[in-house]
Figure 1 (tube, helix red, strand yellow):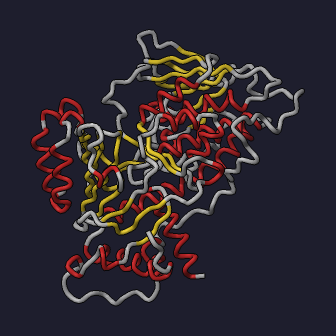
Figure 2 (cartoon, helix red, strand yellow):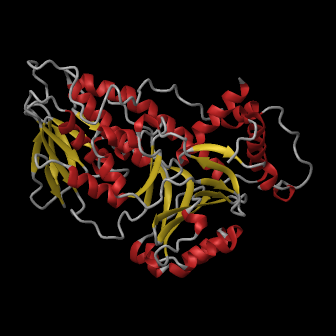
Figure 3 (cartoon, helix red, strand yellow):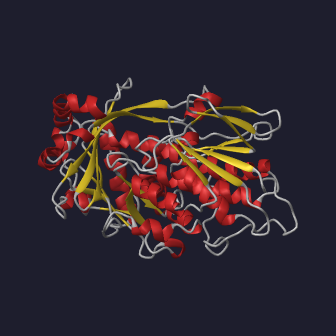
Length: 497
């Protein structure tokens, strides 16, 4: 029983990297030279007790009752709750979606995918500040799409009838297993995919660039969706005739009316700042430096292509490496910081490239020649310094008087330590669109959406804070984390890699 409990707790907290954990023997990746100087603390009596001591500050919320069962909701699903002769509160009405990121595009696709065929659909107007075609330098990094219970991104894509198109655009061989490694690049935990992917999926986890997901989803939108690029929603107010009046960017400050406003304009949401000025992002005590490394086609180093993921330095610095495609990868160096740093990117980062690279080499010295090889192949224009920020999900308690719903990062921005932002955004788009198509009122639908979304996103938020601590573990805390993993290895019984 204790082994089962420990296994389930650890699997939950490691699932953000994809796959299931298996442990290398402790002697292969941790030696006495890494321990704190002086007498080692007493060995913990059991893995479960130790796990509780470390992670009890971040309790897991009760598991949502939401189930991803293909038998109850297929990719060709339509409304199940509304009889043919019942009028829907959004039938023939207007929905404005602020933002054409993953969440907004998933929502727009879901509304028309699940809408009752017997009723006139709502008119969907999509407004996006970015141009239709993004430059290659924007969004050119890979993100994991997963099928674990917390994420469900692949299941949601299947139900949205988008799975085949998205899989066709994935990073080649990206269903390989990741690892959590030590500073010598030796596996601490090897993450493996389940033998059989869940819910009839062809794969359990894949990686894809943000640009590829965006392009695939835009192309999949029906012509009925009004798509407006290079136009941003900047503010909104309650309309005297009901619904919301939304102000658009531009010299004329044009206003458009809608019956429902869906805010999906990202972590730094302009609409959230306008409507919820006190509900912004919070710095969580870590800053990151990142860059993209380029190689000859097929020459991405195997320690990136075949076994990607986090590398724990043990001295307060963490490293993450992921492939982008068959000739490039992205790296992140992360460190703790009491105050947020000045964000740097683009031309400013290029002008400061020598200073930035010197800092990366200093902080990442523990990772040795393998990191240096990535740094030598890094395109200097891709350098960026940014801060880890996040926020708790929004609960929509005033939906009847203010028909505004927040989804994706606009509602619950997560830091890079969550490793789950795209999955959560897709799930939000699917969950809200499905709820709206199946409900008899907007308020009822949003209540059901919150019931599913808020616990899911809160759990991901809490797990990300635990992961942040592990990434930067050193000294006694590192020793404690290693002891917990050793205890769990013993409890699980030495599962083979």
